[in-house]
Length: 284
Image 1: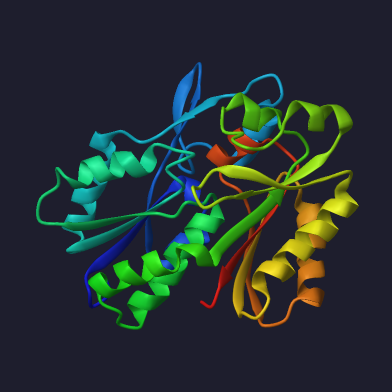
Image 2: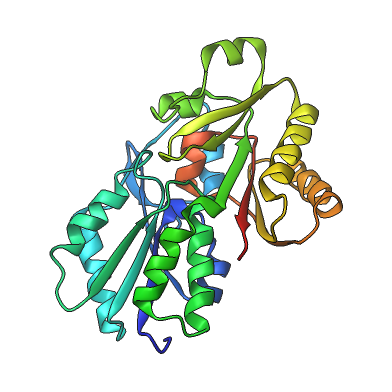
């Protein structure tokens, strides 16, 4: 436990893999993946490979944790001796988890809770938890760190593309991303989150090679003049992700690629196979 007795809590949509959660001592609140036979807890009894193996015939739904589940997690955290919680969530425009945690925070006693809506998705949200964990290790007080997180919200950006948009469409999370025409023309949209935390199309590209080029260009443009952390993620597209990682290693300066990983199950449900994404976090 850190001296500030502050726990970092994320929802599983923040896409922090077990190895990283254990390394940085980050608590996780699982989202749910629902098939007809069972309600699965993301990262507990279901993983993304199980999702991909049941595509395209079976597309499950996802849901947020309940208020009772959040309160149970708060009680666990209190029993571990923590007095403060920084709860970091994926965008409230894409999930109801942020609002559920806020509601639970009004009911918990003897625990200070700060809920941070990252307005981001996947590791673009989760990277705030890694950054906050580093800050706690260096003695930054709870109240100060809460303010610093708000000041950093525009310093995280995630760019990604995938083989098909039908899974985003199925989940109702397609936002400002054009779907049907792109599918017909076999275009790969490069997608990110805007200031409201909704998806939007950065560019429409034909084929993986052009998608890789444009992804790299967007990262270079966003990072320009800054040091940065990067994380490479993939959804059933390992070789493509490794190609992207090699390009970034050769192209970018003043960067550190923290790790590369497979996305979590709930993210797999809503994006489908063939996804490659990169999160960039400025001035860590």
